Image (cartoon, rainbow, N blue to C red; front, top):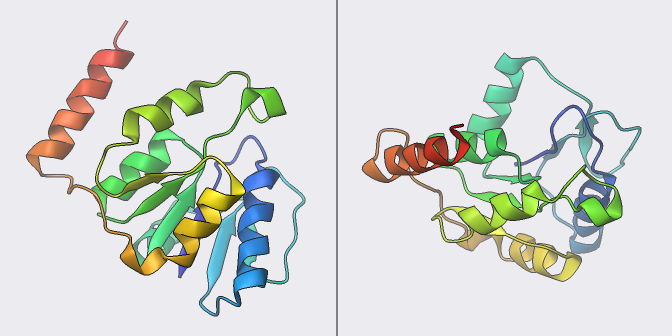
Length: 159
């Protein structure tokens, strides 16, 4: 199963439509579940919902093979915590997808982290999805790498 998540506040139909298109074009037969936030997007290829109870979301996270997400810190850190590969597709301010380009900065910060796969366009996304069997998970919550990663981000975010 693939889990797609874009947060609950701002729609990200560009990513959802690309994943939907890949599922249709590729003939992917596994379940794809997409949390689409405040969007009216509908799909014949994926199970879509605006939001879900935290317990159900955790179940999706644990049951999925990998996650596709906007470059939200919560999604990235959750994927690393449970050692799930995550494909991040940052929102772009120039396309009206966010107020600024902090997601591009987040994507750059995580681009060399094991288990995080940063893509910026349709071709990169389709390539990663088509070759998804080669995706590996990230660091574990109790690993030294994860603690160092959290410490570094805490230092960046500290006033």
